[in-house]
Amino acid sequence: MTKYVLKRLVYMVIVFLLVSLLMYSIYNLIPTDPARAQLEPMKTTLKPEEYEQRYQMLRQQMGLDDPLIVRYLRWIGFWPDVNGELNGMLQGNFGYSQIYKTDVANVLPSRMLNTIYINIFSTLVALAITIPLGIYCAVHKRSKSDNAVQVLSIVGYSIPVYIIALIFIWLFAVTLRWLPVFGMQTPGNNFTGFRAFLDKVYYMTLPVLVMTVGSLGGMTRYVRAAMIEALSMDYIRTARAKGLREKVVVYSHAWRNALLPVITVLIGWFISIFSGSLIIEQMFALNGMGQLYYQGLMNNDFELALAIQMFYVLIALVGQLITDLSYGIVDPRVRVNK
Image (cartoon, rainbow, N blue to C red):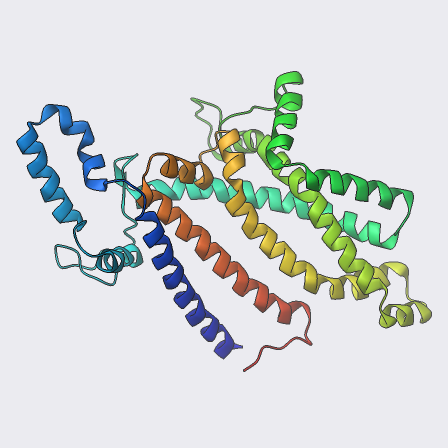
């Protein structure tokens, strides 16, 4: 197992570097000039000759006249900068944000924490609903309740998440006025401790509810399909013939074997939530990674957008590793090749 994990880590590093090179090359096709964008606020206060002199000096300091491969190696942290030091992404330097006029590393932590909060809460709520509901529908296959859940699942799966968001905003925020629409906390509050936590939960309720409802249909159908296949196996008939209680048959025998295909879907779905939360964060004005990524793209702040893109790549690679390792934990019959 240790050898397998080490091989996968090496594989992750190689894939990460290849994807980073590809993404860096794509973002460098954006028609923008970081040096000119950084000097733009000072343009009206400088003489044309002084502005051009500072512009050329800044381009030299930022290494913008170097070949693309040199700039990439400097950005990733394998090539020294103009000061002769390694100061790239691997050393914690993600670049300079033209929007916020500070290092990208200073902007990411709080936004990343908000995105993690939203996604963790929505995942826990969705799992608490979809797993019991999928098991119930599989056990009571073709019953009226199962048919009703299947119809609702198809409808929910077919509706785009932004439509669900608009419906919920109209219902819970505009009509009933139960929940706030924008932000992560009450403006100007001085809450601390548990009171601050409750305030954040109150503001996150509506976006978490939208993300949960948007994922219920697909996940319920996955769990139901996996359980139906597990319940049709010979060992389930044998367990029932031995006189085991139905709960033991369903949860101790069928569910454990249905977990293997479900885990793959669950982790992939969790990763997709991270990358797909852009719409939710934008609609509810949540200060998360998705909204920050959108701002970076719209304002040609490619170093900010690129850092966030690589964060999503890292999440996907780690998620894939966790998926593979989970196979051996859930099903002892599964063993990785040495």
